[in-house]
Image 1 (cartoon, rainbow, N blue to C red):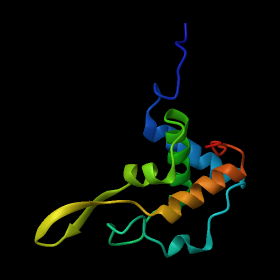
Image 2 (image 1 turned 180 degrees about the vertical axis):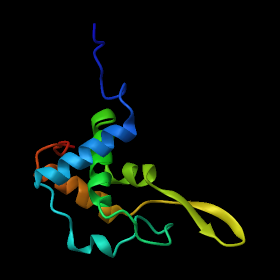
Image 3 (image 1 turned 90 degrees about the vertical axis):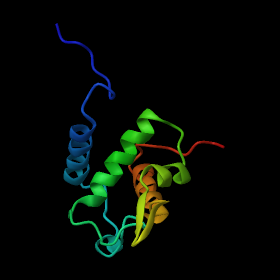
Length: 119
């Protein structure tokens, strides 16, 4: 007998990878023109190496919203933030890029996967 599974029962890395692959193959998600020039946050030194990083981030945000909804851009900036390396001084937490997260949310709204909360 097969045990019913939910989103929390599946490995999150595999799920995000499969959702990103689906978003890329479906052709509904259009990658922004600036995606090859942007960093993921002010704490990053370089742009992402992965060519399909936008699909992966959009899939990750979709999974996050499915598990913890409603969530805004500010909360997602904290989730995807990281440590800013400041040389000799200790690391300091820095939020992720709000523009990237906002554009990913707008993309998910355009394909009708998420909708805005009335408040």
